Length: 430
Ligand code: S3P
Image (tube, rainbow, N blue to C red; front, side, top):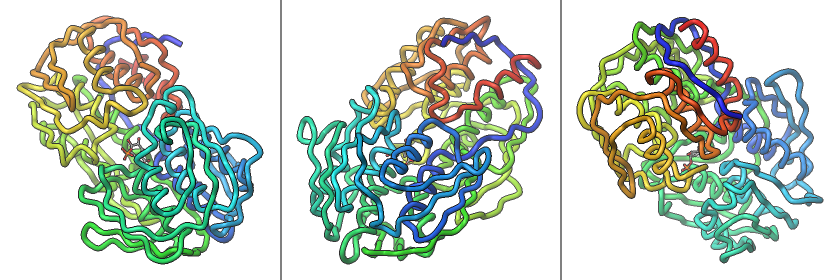
């Protein structure tokens, strides 16, 4: 599906953002490892999270959809899963594939995990390597570099592992395998990445500790199910934060949004750029901090994003590029080569699309340099099949002259199925 977006202004009112995708994946996977029934309130209806639920059902987890966005599942107390009769399909979801690799490695059966054509190009070896050191037997094309991967579950041994890159998916896969193994697994995390796995395990009473940069997780670590309420998705909120910052005469409120410090790098960067953002009504629920955000139109200035900041704003870098086109001065992003192996090559996608909209920008192997402000001209751009690129270009369309056409737009449902209807409200009012 193609969509057309018109220039718009005056975004007002409250926007309710649906559930966090990363936390929903973990609620389902970690809930399935617990003993007893996990009730999950505000479970994400993103396609990626439904892929996780399907895979769990295929390994014997009983999942009930109680009402909209509410699911319950019966935990398998670490080892009660069963061999799947067919290939597990992670679809477009890196989190599903990588976290399940950790869980499946320590089970006593055979399984195969695959994904769509985008996921089949994404690196899996980074997860396979530490799991093999723990005794996992995983085989696949290119020495298990890419999906599909076949896993012959084994009893695993503990590992001392230093993360070679700041990846929450890799870290979480090793933590989940660590839960299933003998002894205490130690993970050294030089640069922090999102810590939802650690927080949720701690919330459920599993033995997991973080001391400075080292995470320690006890093997054969049984824990009990508890009700989980998922926060609003900060990454989804950022599309509307960016729109309100850039469009004239805007003032919006976003309640109940997760503000986990390992996720909110975009907020900090936007504040440094001069963005009017207030964070209030802070609270804590299920071991995750959340708050209400108020955002209004702002005059922005260019900033330098440091490589250490990248993991805490990794998914929001396309939006940083958009803000940079409208900010006064130079914005530089470095140390973000991981973007080249996301759902699309996001550096290329940013460069190709913004050039089509008339922006002069410099592509780097690990980032980009943009000098603003530059007028965005409505143009025909591509999603590259990548949800975050599709949605970033839709927000760009709101502040561009004339009309912007986005090809292959419907992939936004991968993380944010309500995006189009929320955006539509502004297209009519604008
Ligand atoms: C995710 C971690 C991030 C992020 C992805 C979701 C997660 O990837 O880009 O959208 O839920 O753990 P890495 O930390 O593995 O780079």
